[in-house]
Every structure is written in structure tokens, then in C-alpha cells.
Length: 88
Image (cartoon, rainbow, N blue to C red; front, side, top):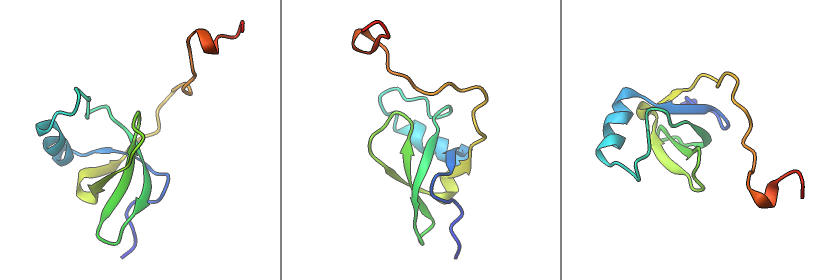
């Protein structure tokens, strides 16, 4: 079977997925707004997702995921603070 998601696809949770994740509130994360990137798809209809703001991947069933629309006008993440100021 051909994978539903390709490596690099941007995804978010479906309503079914939100029900499962909101039950296990993780550090106050807003799962409705959370987006991630597919790192790998498996033959068992699961995807390894790297959620924005995380360093480790999470295995998520395809039925919990849907493709996310690209963000409009989203600025790239930049480092801020005294060590990263343009004056130094």
C-alpha cells in the first residue's frame, strides 16, 4: 500500500486525534493549533511526526492526521536575546 503521507508533509491532528491527545494534556500544549512534519511513514499506516517545538518524533496513526495548509505570512523562526542581537 502506498503511504498516505510523504516525508516532509506538514500535518495536524484530525478531530478524532484531538480527542485522544486532549485527554492526556501534555504541558498545556494547544493541540488544535499544533503542526508537525512527517519524518517517515510506515507500512502499518503510521507516521513518525516531529511536532513544532519538539526535538523527538512521535508515532501517530494515519487516522489521527490530516495535511495542514501552509501558513500564510509565517515568518521564519529567529533567535533573539542579548547573545543574538545584531549589535554584538
